Image 1 (cartoon, rainbow, N blue to C red):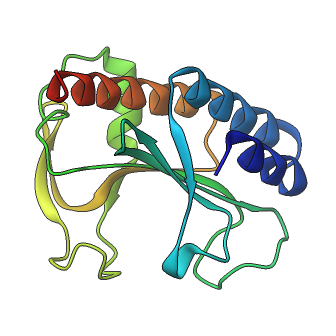
Image 2: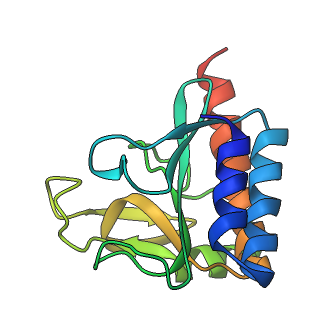
Length: 167
C-alpha cells in the first residue's frame, strides 16, 4: 500500500504530538525509499504496516488511535517495532550513549505470543546482553520525539545492512 494510506490513517486516528511524530516518521521512511505494505492475516483488518526496503523487512507500524475500536490486547495510540531478521547487526554497533540507552529501554522482551515459536532468545544489543528478546527486538509505544529519532537510527542501520547484503 502507498504511504498516502498510512498518512490518511494517521490523520484519522491520531491527534496532536502523536499525529505530528507519526507523520514525520512516515515522511522519513518515504524519503529513505521504504515500501509500505498493509498487514495481512491477523493484521488485515487493522491499521498495521510492514515497512520494507528492497523487499526486506525493516520495521512495522500499528496506528490504533486514541479511543478507537481495537482488539483488547492492542494499546491505544501507535507503535513502532523493529525487525530482528536473525542478524548480529545490533550486537556491538557503535552508537552514542544516549541512543543506546533509548534502544535498551525499548528492547521488546518476549510476551509468549507465539510469534517466534521459542519464547524469545538471548541477544547482544549494542554491547549489552538481554534475555528472551522478541523477534521484533525493539518496540516503541506512543514514542516521544527522541524515541522516534532513535527508531530512525535503527532504520538507517537496517537499510545499510540490506544494502551491504545486496551488493
